[in-house]
Image (cartoon, rainbow, N blue to C red; front, side, top):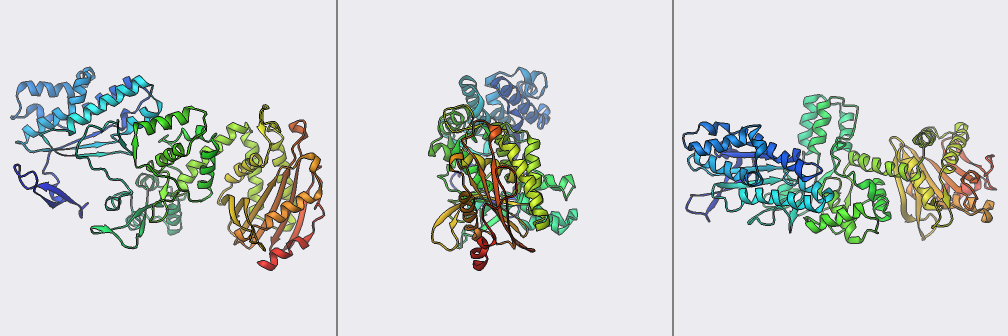
Length: 579
C-alpha cells in the first residue's frame, strides 16, 4: 500500500487535469463510507432486503456524529436518525434503501465543508451470486432492482462522490446491477498491474512464520496447502518481458491456519463458504466429472475463459444445476470460469490458457465433493470403502513379499464385497448402474482417492514401453518410493480365460515409464459381467511386483484361490531391462 499511487484532481474546477499522489498521504484526508453486503445473503428477497437495512444501519452508525453537525439542518438530522435507529431503520422503504448511501455521502460532503466522499463497498456481488443461481424469477428481479438502485444513486452522477471502490468475486456485466454505471474500471487477479495486491507472497508469509515460530517442515507443508495461486509479476509500468509468474497464498486460509495455532494440523478453511456446493449435482454430468477428476489428478485443463459474467451466463449456470440435459461446451466454459473467478482454479503458465487446482486445500474441497457423489450414486456403505482404502494404504506402506499376498487377499475381499453391493446390469435401459470398465474404474478411483499422503493419477495418456503406441493408464498411485499402476477389465463370463489376465498385466506394465519410484506394483483387476445377480459377481486379481526383496507374481482367481493365471516372473524381464 505504501508504494501505491492514486490519481487525484488538481482542483475543483479542473476536472481533466490529474496527478499521482502516494496512497498513504491521502489517508485521513477524505470522508469515507464503508459498507459490507456479505451478511445480506439469503434464500429469498424479503430477507435480503432486511439484511440490507441492517447493513445501512451499521454503516450510518459509524457517522452518528452527524446528528450534532453544525453544517446540517434539523430535518437532515432527523432523517439521519431514521437510518441510525435500530427500530426506525427496520421501517425503511425501498426508495429510502436505494438512496441511503447517496444521502449519507451528501451529509458528509456538507459536514466536511464540501469535501468529496470515498464510498467503499465490500462484497458488492455476494447477494447476486446466490440470487442468480437460486432465486425464483420474481425475487431475482426485485433483488437486482434494489441493488441497481443503491449503486446507481451512490455512484452515478453523485456530485458528492470523489471515488467509489467495489470489491467482490465477479464483474457482473450486461443486464446486471452495474449496467447503468459509467466510467467503471474493473481489475482482477489476471491483470498484472493489480495482481500484486492479491494474496500474500512467500516473503510476506515467511515473516508470519518467523513471528509465530512455525517449524520449517510445517511451513513447507503449509505452502503446499495454502499457496499456489499464480499471478503475473508486475515491474513498473509493464509486465516483465519473461512473463514471470508469482505464487500467492490465500490470505483467509493462511491467516486462519496461523490463528488456530495447531501448526501440524492442516485443514480446509473453505468449508463454510458453500460457494461450490452445487458442484455435487453437476458431477452426474460426464463432462464435468471428467474435468474434476483430471484436476484432482493434478492435470491442467483448457477452456475459453469468461472474465465478465452476464445475467445470461448465470441463467445458464442455474439451468445446468437444476436440469438434466447434457452440458454444452459453452456451459462447461461458464462453469469452469466461475470456479476460476471463485478461487478454485489458477492459471498455469504465462499464456493464461491452461488452468489447474492451486493447492491441497482446493484439492481436498474438490475431492470431498467427488467422494460424496460416489457415495450417493453407488449407495455404498462408507465403512466398506474405508476398509478397502486402509488395506490399499497398507499395500503402499509395506510392499514386501512376506506381507504382500496377505494384503492383496484382504484387498481382494474388500473390493469384492463392494462390487457385490452395486447393482450393475448389461442393459443401459435396465435399472441399476451399467457394468463396464468406467464404473469399476470410478469405484477404484474412489477408494484410492481417500488414501493418505499419496498422489493419484487417472486415465494418464503416455507412450508405452518398447513401443511407439500411445495408451492410457487406468490408475497410477505413488507414495514415497512406491508406485502402483492398475489396469481394469470387465470381461464377460463367456469370454473368460487365463489370457485376459496376462494381457491386462502386460498392459499395466507397458505404462511403467510413468513411474519413477524404486518399488513398483502392477495390478490387473477383472470384474466379471454378465452374471445374473450382483451376489454372483466375481473378481480376479493378478499382480507383478518389483520391490527390494525381488520380483514376484501372484494372483487370486474368481473362486478366491491363489492363482497366477499361467504367468511367471519372466513377464517382468522386458520391464526391468528397460529400467
